[in-house]
Image (cartoon, rainbow, N blue to C red; front, side, top):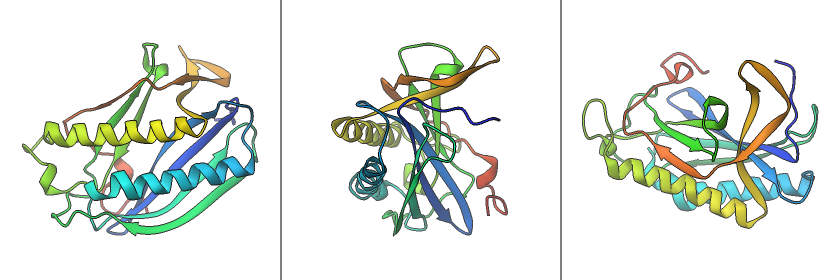
Length: 203
């Protein structure tokens, strides 16, 4: 797809490794006071790494490594990117689930329809979140949802809105992307998977 800019937008990505599999999840952000500067990319990356340390890694497997945090200026093709190398691991010593297992964290906006929802596949899960063969516990789902809400709160305090970037609507390209602020995080208790996380892929 042709590059579609995000007005005042940035993309925040967490890059992970586990059992020789590489995967990531990304969020879209909008600076509230104009286009992002290089200093904004650095500030967001450091805030995201602190969030991982303070609110997320305790819930995920010690076999999982956060390789790096990437923040990209999405206002124009070829705009700057900042990469923060990390290398820290999760802290749960419970047995890890297969690398294909993921929790689905959905971002909801005030608008309905597929163009106005986001989704994150969160790996690094362990046996202590399992309730049945198909589901994690409600407590685990609530913990993950609260962690993402905390990240949004912290970024908002720094002047960055967490948004869903809509690049198509009803099959028609939206250029520039339409940005709608996230108003809720919903975590499905059903385990899911993503092909790039299956053994032998994503490397």
